[in-house]
Image (cartoon, rainbow, N blue to C red):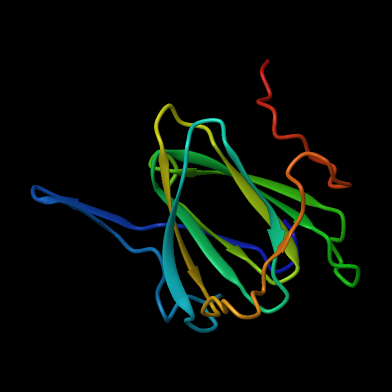
Length: 151
């Protein structure tokens, strides 16, 4: 596992009315602070990535559909520099992935329908000076290919 990355199995509480799923709590061991919560979507087969942040930690999950979240440790001073982690996240695997600053990340829609991702981050988005640094999803030095792995 990449240094600083954490995966939490999410608690789903079902009853006859529906269900409740806790995504992030202030008493979680890896929670640091609140910046904002946002929702994004991903169509089947679409790759959204790569990018990284200098200050921001992401707490990411998918609530509808399935996505493949991939992380690459591009931090020169990290003990796991160069490591890749792959997580399958969504309604069939309700987990939350903590992504520390400096770790490149992206995701790909792997369900037959649009996936809905909820991301809670430690910093509010700064429109004047965004802490978002993008890398082309396919043409880069990251040792990962987004293609499906059949077999």
